[in-house]
Length: 258
Ligand SMILES: Nc1ncnc2c1ncn2[C@@H]1O[C@H](COP(=O)(O)OP(=O)(O)OP(=O)(O)O)[C@@H](O)[C@H]1O
Ligand SMILES: [Mg+2]
Image (cartoon, rainbow, N blue to C red; front, side, top):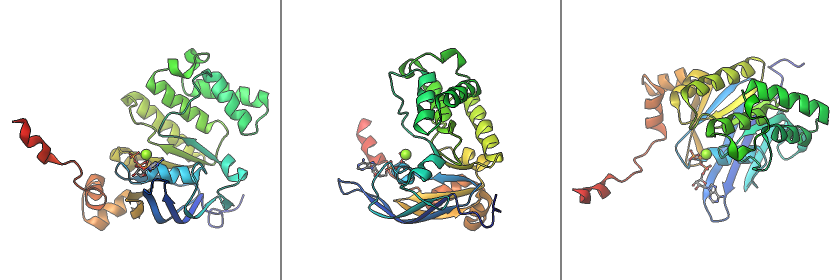
C-alpha cells in the first residue's frame, strides 16, 4: 500500500455546480477535498445543498459543471462507484424484498458471487441486529430497523468511502450510540467517512474535520476546535449560528393568534 502522504484524496471536488431543471441553483462552484482515512462532517441548514452534493459524488444526479474524483478515479466510472457505500437520507428500500434479499442483491450488483454475497448478507444481519427480521419485507420494519438495513446495505461491499446522509435522524438514543460505535470502528479500520447531520454534538464527537455549507457553498472548514478558535466561541453551535444560520421562520405571522 502507498503511504497516506502519497495516496490520492478519498474525494476531490472542483468547481462543482448543480442547477436543477426548475432553475434552483443548489451548488455553486464548490471545491472540496477530503483526505483518505478522514472522518468528515458536512453541516448546514435545510436546503444548503448537502444531499445534492452527495448525489453528485455518487453519480446519482447530472452535474451542471465541475469535476469529481474518488480516490483519484473519475467519479462517473464503475471503479469509483464500487469504492463508495451510501446510506441515503430518504430510505430507498425495495418494498418487495426481505432484509436478506435486499442485502444479497446488493452484493450481486456490486460484483460479488452469490455465495460470497450470501455470507456477507448474513454477517451484516447479525452486525445490525436484524436476525429476527431476516425474512421480513422492508415496509414491515420499524423506522429504526430500516435505517439499520440501509446502513448494512451501504457497508456490505466493503466500500473505502462511506457516505452517510443523516444516518441518525429519527433514531432512538441507544441505537444512535450503537451506530456511532460501529461507524467509529469502521473508521479505525481505515474507511473514510463522510457524514451529514443536524446533531452538532454528533459531528463534534465523531468528525476530525467539519465543513459548513450554506447556499451551495462551503463557508468554513476545520476541526471543531479550530472552528471554535477561529470564531472565538466555546461551542460548535455558536460557530454554526455565526456562519450558516439565518432567521428563516417569520415570527410576525403569530401576532394574529391573540
Ligand atoms: N430534484 C430537485 N429539483 C429542484 N430542486 C431541488 C431538487 N432537489 C433538491 N432541490 C433544491 O436544491 C436545494 C438543496 O437541496 P438539498 O436537498 O441538497 O439540501 P440539504 O442540504 O440536503 O437539506 P436538508 O438538511 O433539508 O436535507 C434546495 O433548495 C432544494 O429545494
Ligand atoms: Mg439533505
